[in-house]
Image (tube, rainbow, N blue to C red; front, side, top):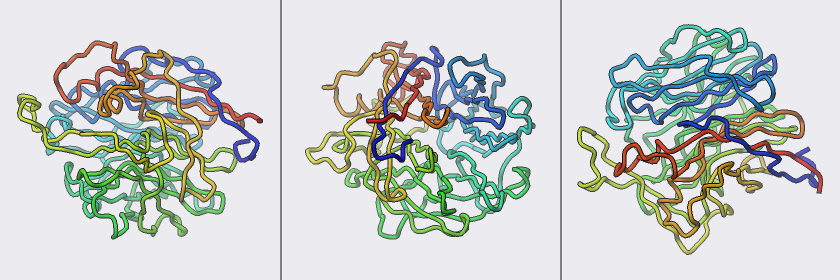
Length: 404
């Protein structure tokens, strides 16, 4: 019903999914109708970052205790990834790194696990590697309707701290054997005119006409660049891609879905006058024993450069296959522990809802799960530039499409 011009979107209900520490959820529906939810306790593969897999058999009203816990085997290791469901087949792709939040040059690997029974049992982890080099899986894997081929977008980089547009790219990995083996199928890069933006987290979607839409996060690595996000399109099954060009909005952690034949985007976003970039850490900000060298800086500007007016997880619609996007709805915090509206730009950025997972419940409703910061939770590492990572829980909104 979202493609009906008279339809409206509203938050039908909201709830706390997990009251304890929770980060970066990924949501998918299995072939038998269950929902799988993969989430982490920390973020960015920092030391001790574990993942937990939950199941819901009632459309997300209740969730099981963790059916699986994923722990790194590396010294000071952490894991973070995403779950995809393609009929009976379920796939978990994740990055395993050795405390790369604090030591960005440490070893890291892209891993995969498979399930052929709706996520009840899983294979042992396998390393996904090839001529493409290092990659960070983020977006869901999709199965193409005609060929049955599975595609997975993975963020590639020359180095973990490489933030130039020339050094970043999105690998499209392909499998023709239900995820047993993978090969490089295509590569997406930013348009040559883009000089100060890095393309990172990317989501892909097969449109009704068979073209594949890709939407990717854009990170500004200099204070002069406004971090618009990217769009690209492929009309040959993901083998070649148009140069990725900035769109009219700025987002992180994009999740594309086709809802009643209409592409929708759920992602973290910011008001159009919010501007952020990376800067070197000041001496007093450096954590003893850490090789972290940079952090985010932010400010409000007078001019609005995008149509977004809220901080948080936003649902967007498009009428031109992703060339332009319209913000439709911002997710609600079930705890109502809002950061004051007059807080500085960086505080509002750090304590905004983020990292959504989304799945259709039926033809009229969507479930959006996301990490919700709560500044009233204990600050486990006061003084660190990333201490807010430990003040988050998992929340959910049910979105309904109705009639005006």
